[in-house]
Image (cartoon, rainbow, N blue to C red; front, side, top):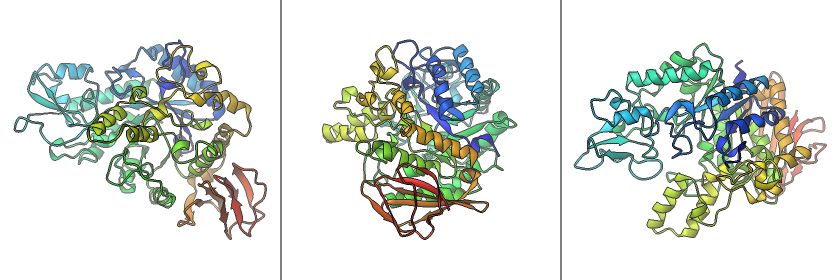
Length: 539
């Protein structure tokens, strides 16, 4: 068994985690000061969103120097201290790594722009204009064309994200070699591995308008593995928006030597209108959601590895999106935690999720920081959408929802900073904060702590087979995990109404493993589950 198979990973978005020097921006010393808290929660690793040198056009996902720390976050000495201090608490640091693109301020791109003969020119993707326009119709994820004209040379460069994020050309062998050298620099420091940003795009074929899953993608990943990861006890998780169970096996089958696991997003896109953008909303259908989660549980089985998550720095808060963040906030937060952590795979907790932090409501576009939300707003306003409907979708789906500062206490600025935070603290911090959660044995925090403890001590959670029951029920999510003669039953009512559960498997002898409601017994003649009630019993 690999350490990451029964591990629980905690994602830190450093800008919003803890500020140590009063400038309103979270930093590495702030993270170090909170390691005891993470040790108490019980997590095994921290996935650290980028802290590299960056102009911050896309909050650090535009890296200008892979081997330097952004001064806002601290120094390389701080980084070394974080790795060391985390290790003392048996916590590994998993670095976020962006190798699909760099910042346009990275030295490679600065050199590349000097002319077509420059050795770094081919580190990026350049094309001539076609009929005086862009080379083709490839679009940027952040809106507009994916091609930007370089006035000096008259050529266009490719950027699948912001124009300040030029795409790297993975066909260039020297560029790949430089990437591997940089990865080894970090691995030699003793980090626990990498989260690989949009890694499914590195095999792109721009001339054919192929971005994800290009023909050489898996060749590149195997080469990357052989040159960096091989023989090291580390984990890698690839962000792969295009992944299917079939391609996830290619990435994560243990015999293929590519990645440990992938983030797949199929279950995260079910509240969007099919074939449209994330901004085109539709109500979540629980049956469809169960179907997708089950597919990934069953089809990957032993041929790959799942990651389990309901939110991250790019997506809304789980309790606001999939639960109820008002009347049933704590109960639905616990319910979602139980349902996802009881599955097979490596669970990820996004900072603040473990206390049920909620989405952020804005009343004006001036309050929005996220480049993706602002670009969408501008484009759609011109297309005739109303300001009101655009602010509504930003409040539901915008990336700032996840990025408000962590709510540590009821003190000013939620204990995040002594200065003015870079993004305003949520107004509900006086009720929802870590200090209050730690004092209340019934809080969301202790449900997460218990789930982590259960995973460490029960192989059934790591290795058990998954079987969905009552697939057609519109409100109940019920499944079994079975391993070496032991069976656990997971029951959850993901709705705001009581629901009756009739199951032959349930009996008075069923032993309660965990529950988010005051339930002491289980009866065989049908059970009424209160809104967002969830429990796990050993059959």
